[in-house]
Structures are given as C-alpha cells and as structure tokens.
Amino acid sequence: MNVKINKDILAPYLLFNKPIKYDTHITLYPVIMNDVLTFQILIQSITVRKNSIFRDKKIIKMSYLDFLFYCLGNKELETTYKISGLSQYYFYAVQLLQLCCKDTEIKLNEQTGKIYINSELITPQIFDDLRRIIIIQNGVNFNIDEFMNQDTENRLLKIKQDANKNNNEASLEDYIDSLIIALNSSEEKIMNMSIRKFWRYIKRYQLYENYTISKTGECSGMVKFKEPIKYWMVSLEENKDKYKNFKANETELRSKIEG
Picture 1 (cartoon, rainbow, N blue to C red):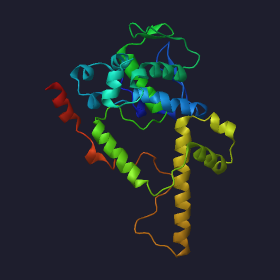
Picture 2 (tube, rainbow, N blue to C red):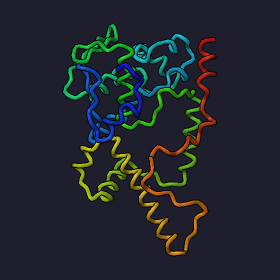
Picture 3 (cartoon, rainbow, N blue to C red):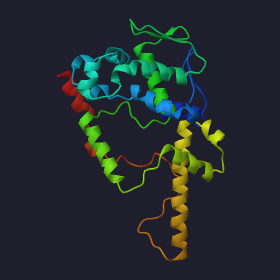
Picture 4 (tube, rainbow, N blue to C red):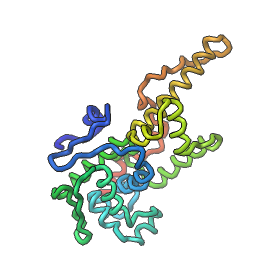
C-alpha cells in the first residue's frame, strides 16, 4: 500500500470482517476466537516498543523485521531487558503471519532472516504494513506510533492493576459464557466470531446494561445522576486517554536517539 495504514483506511474491511487484500500475493484474514489463545501468544512478537525500550542505538536504527531477526536466539538480550520469549519472537511473527494469511505458502530462511509469502519477499516496509494491518484488523490495543519506555509502560500497568484490584477479574471463558447468554448464541458461533468483534460486542453489551440499569433507576425517581446518562450507542473509542501525562513525548525521545 502506498498510503499510511490506519483505521480510517481499513474501515470498509473492518465493518463486516472482510479479508484485507494487501497486494496480489498477500491477503490477511481476521483471526477468529477459536484461535484466540494462540493469537495472544504470537501477537507479543509485533507489539514490542523497540524504539523506546532498547537503549542500544544500533537496535533503534533497525527496521522492526531486522530487529526480530537480531533477537532470534539472543538469550542475553532477552535476559537483559527481561522480555520473556524475545529470543523466539522472530518465529512467533512467522507463525502469526501463517495464522492471518490463510492457505498461504510462507517460507523463511533462518540464515538470512528473509521471509517469503507466496514467493513474494517480505521487505521491512511490507512487514511494517502487515504489522499495522494485523494490529488494527484484530483490535489489538497497541499504538505502533506511540513512544513509551518500559518504566512508563510498567507504571501504567500498575495503575490499571490498582484500579481493578477490588474487582473480580473475569477470565476469557467467563466473557465467552456471558456473551453466549447475552446474545442467546452458541459456542460454535462464538468460536467463529472474529476476535475484534467479540470484544466490541462485550463492550457494547456492557454499555447497554449500564444504560438500562441507570435509566430505570432515574425514571423511577429513586436515583439522580449529576451527569447525563451516556447512551449505549456511542463510539467505543470516544474515551480520552487517561494516561496521557505519563506517556513520553515522541519529539523528546527522538532527540535523545539522534543525539
């Protein structure tokens, strides 16, 4: 693709889970819930904040694909940065491509790090495009363009954990069970649902339930709210970034990298 890949560009495909044809050789399909556990493992390979976690300028200047190959078998790097599985992320990425590109011939050369999809050489630029598509197509909560160092990311994770410490965390199976009941659906239908749509339905139903309960209480006259009740058919992406002040400034980071 000759344009920067983002949600707006991919919107016609995302609407009804259509496969995304990258070029004449490569088509990416949304991953379904039947493969969600495998996907959760493999997606780690393309969501490393390379440019803000690693302090080595040599790594920072690498393309993401070259970075993955550099990490292959590099246990020392994995230990130094405490990223479990980093030394195998190159293979994870290849398996992820196999998962997203159905019935596609994918070959790799472990000596050179070159990957071929249907005989097309995957250049660093093509890999970056495919990486963006996979993240957006499957609703992964990760912004490739966001600069955030590891300390900040750990701090945000702690904030999230502290906010949820009094809540009973639901497991994936709990969410699946809940959606089956909410939609009067079946396990088979959920298994074949795309991961992105599954989580959108979960969020949408939560909004619907909260709206219904709040509106019922308000109409009964027994409950009053300081703010208007948010309608349940709103954008799922309308919430502002609560952690904006914790995130690193891209310009500042780039100046440090180039200095």
